[in-house]
Length: 172
Ligand SMILES: Cc1cc2nc3c(=O)[nH]c(=O)nc-3n(C[C@H](O)[C@H](O)[C@H](O)COP(=O)(O)O)c2cc1C
Image (cartoon, rainbow, N blue to C red; front, top):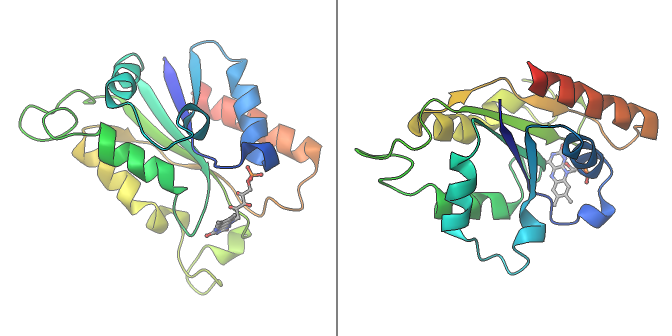
């Protein structure tokens, strides 16, 4: 399955997790890694180019560090610009129908924080409902998210292991 991984990280130069995931995913055949902040340093998204890229892949992955319980902001801008009425949704908006959609997220907070009673109160499934709703409205099949919690103390080896886990998940 041809997969496009859209990476949204505003400071990849300081990233440990998302950079490691990106570099590992680039080695895979049938996988296109798209660095959104690198492609659009001014923040002006090329709608046509992004729509063409989407059409060329059967699976779409949004990969990002959790920022304020959501994605970094350029990914929201990408949604607003690229997923137009009549193209991605609406009466004739069927271009994404049947594709598979997945999230790959790293979080600073540890796993126990992401549940009722934990210090963040809500699970990642709850916090990512807008992405699930986006997939639903555009006719994409939402797959369970790949989530790595509590990333700050991880060793390079553990980070590399998580990259292998992500590759395995995307091979299914
Ligand atoms: C602006 C900002 C907001 C953040 N918000 C959250 C958050 O809501 N929940 C959380 O668990 N971690 C949060 N973090 C921590 C990041 O998720 C964490 O640093 C990131 O996943 C590490 O990945 P990286 O090595 O690719 O940068 C935030 C970090 C920044 C800089």
